[in-house]
Length: 150
Length: 150
DNA sequence: TTTAGAATTAGAATGATTCTAACTGCATTG
DNA sequence: CAATGCAGTTAGAATCATTCTAATTCTAAA
Image 1 (cartoon, rainbow over the protein chains, first blue to last red):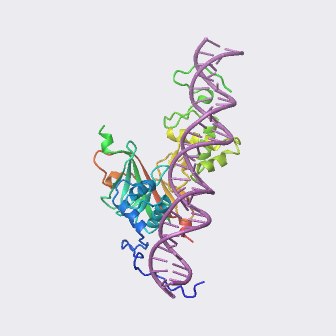
Image 2 (cartoon, chains in turn purple, yellow, orange, brown; image 1 turned 30 degrees about the horizontal axis):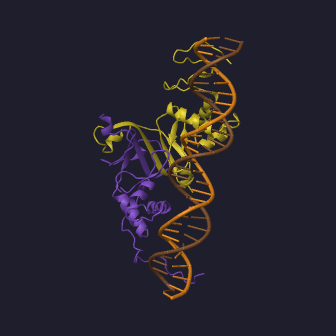
Image 3 (tube, rainbow over the protein chains, first blue to last red; image 1 turned 180 degrees about the vertical axis):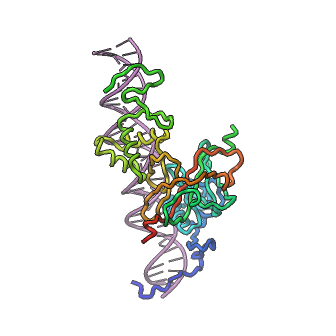
């Protein structure tokens, strides 16, 4: 056993650098970087499998297990968001701005919608006194403008 | 068992009666009735497996496949709601009043919260023109009053 | 360089849900 | 009332998403 475990706050050197966003703390390994970059350049809320697919051109050897692993770390660090809209696969999203999701029931697309004004759920719903809100997830289901036009 | 006369498209007779709620149209077979009643008397948003468990005392032979089948029909008919809050099992809910879900990240409980005033998402988020809203799902995650008190 | 711990991997395991094919029972038809 | 047909039901298989496991590789500190 190590007598002096003197790597407490782990110094950012080499690969052990950290993404300077939101004060998060993830080791930015090459794979995590790939996954994050793929997600950051996607607006369609890809699934883990979609992400593997897109990452493969740059990192042909990456496995689905690693994608899940990276997504988990990035999610925990608050760098990306996990989105559940339907049964089945989870979707991921790197839009860090406050937003909600619109899901088109016809074409299946998921569209981000950004707030135009402050929203406080406690003003609209009767939550028991003492409830502490950490985050809210609003999903709107319907028909997107494109599908509605047909 | 009540034998009975004709049925043009389908007349409520014997088992072939329909639940007179919301103008829905489901054949209310004994199993569907059991599933619905179990759900209607639950406030904890049970999973399919939970429901099977509770139904078993009354219908010992029912299978999980039948529970899923019933839930699917009841959901399609709008008699119950499917709730997705986390990865893993789906939850179901027979609260037909407009409401949202509060999910306690500490104890895992899901609590219904009812509206105190009208809520129009289009007032708060910038949806593309032409978007048609069918329904909105709001999930609030945090700590319930009980857990917060500790 | 050595070493401990973290990251990565393939493949196995798990868990939730859906599918399949056979069977049952009710209700309309003959 | 018997025959027929279809919806409902079933067990178990199949599928799909995700997590776990155990072995291996990599990184950074000592």
